Image (tube, rainbow, N blue to C red; front, side, top):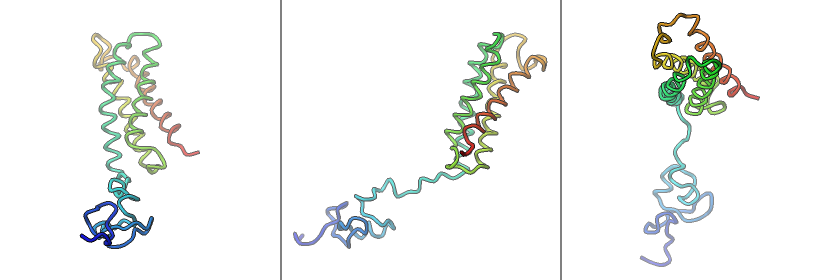
Length: 174
């Protein structure tokens, strides 16, 4: 190897094929053929892939967040079913937590379209209602899924309303 032959800055054992268009350092043919207008120093390999996440993957992420967080929130809610005040406060807090988990996993505008944000909001509502159902299912005694509607409807309504409200508040554009 001759000392006068320029070497690639990313791959010193490889002869340079030309300069980097961004910084002017020598780069090899492999870096030139990669389709990136930079050398390995200006543009590391990990960044050349697109960071755009497809909407279907975002929706799956949101659904998984709801499926994981709803039973956990339901277990917490089940401890306070017959407690005045907490029986109505915990479904709201659970709904906010589940909605936040779904939106963080799926994304908010401008990362997602308004339509996908609404869909993720619907997933959050389903997760919140599932959390209340799990709370009733985990509760021993007469306050279960078969309890009278007048007794179980308010927590469901509060959870759904809180999930919708949190979705609208956190995804609306200024």
